[in-house]
Length: 256
Image (spheres, rainbow, N blue to C red):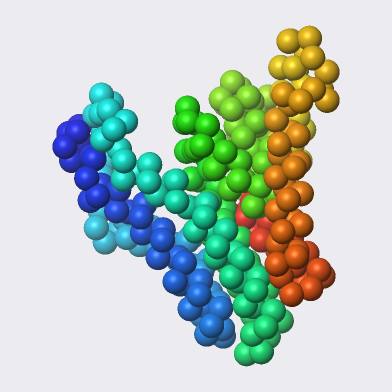
């Protein structure tokens, strides 16, 4: 078992902080173009596997009695990731349309890579944040999910997956012998339905209709609509921004 004193330092949290290296990498890719387009998805999909091979894995369980106060370095990276990811996305939406050195496929590749970062890092950090008691952290989870139009994941994960994991009632539990290309489209459709049904059922148990203000879907819809409007206005042209947002959502949800 990993002792408390070995958990709380920056050394233990350093692998998570390495996610910040994706920001200058994304800037380098956008500025350089060409062959560098492959670096963003490659680094998020395979870099950490390579690092595991080089430096080895920590296979010991952490001391479960470690107080939350000793986990500040772990908590800090999840707290700062939303403004970091949002700033990077805004910069890319401003820069890429004006970059004459980037061809159409290169521009598409940049935003595909941004979607991969949003899915592999952003949604994973949102998953950690939604489990916390702090209202700030839960709001940061909602904001991160709204950036990839995946807000319903919070309801699906907490109301459905945690209750029905490993059973046919859990959409994200893979069916027996189900390949990825069947699993992925099924999850995209069924998760939205099951999340909605779970929230409506909870409201019904309290004697409230689906349109009641406590339905979190109102928050999801407002955040996602606000995200779309802001990024469209920020980008150079409504059509370009809409195309980039769709590309980022697709690669983000796929990566998650």
